[in-house]
Length: 307
Image (cartoon, rainbow, N blue to C red; front, top):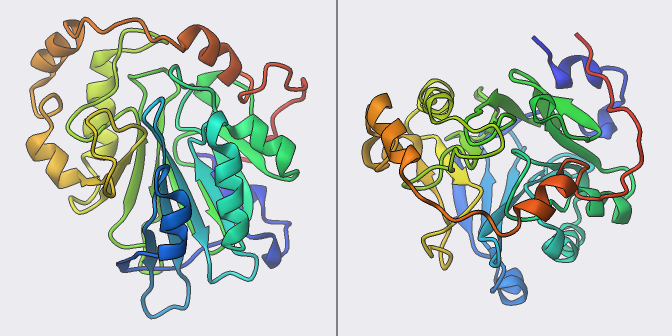
């Protein structure tokens, strides 16, 4: 099994921000950020702490045209305040970078849960504006990035880490990022599910190598096996719940998700009869997202992962 955090960064100094530590959530509401980003972001900081001094700063940001959530996480107890963005959108890159700078964070990763069909990822654009940031996507997606991750890899930022879980079905390369397991990691755990699990829904399975059978198995084996109080943060809000923090839990979705609570046969029938319109952005978004969001991304190999 590959372990990004264990071997890839072993030669780097402590200040390079690739390690871990934290726990126990509180919600804070910073008014100055709320005023500036009110129409575009969930402005609550999810700060975790326990006996250790480490804390996770968390923000949920929103791009209204594609109804996409971008997530900012940082270890604010680490000297470098290392941070990462999950599923950034090209149209809101300047907003995201401004927030990172205002909070005094050092962005080290710009990550995707999968190759999106409804918007162009902001990862490539971020790399042009903040040299040193590494783009991240799954190896199974067959797209380009600095780091190609696989199930079981750990992505460290400061004293915190995200565990990679392969959750294909919406696309072949979907992954879910889950905060680390351990007393010095955030509790309850947090799962960034992309389109695999949406709140009271799930991603479609009729293109990009999608499979309803595979999605059902992915969710039930990789997400619904997490502790029931694990918080689920999806890639999209299609139901208009954007005035408040958009969050569910594994336990809630196991009880109330109208698709994923069915047996596998009924789930497949539901997914095969959705009759959804062809995604309006897919012909532009997918080719761009296969090259980190930039059509002219330079041809260079991804950074290798040590065994």
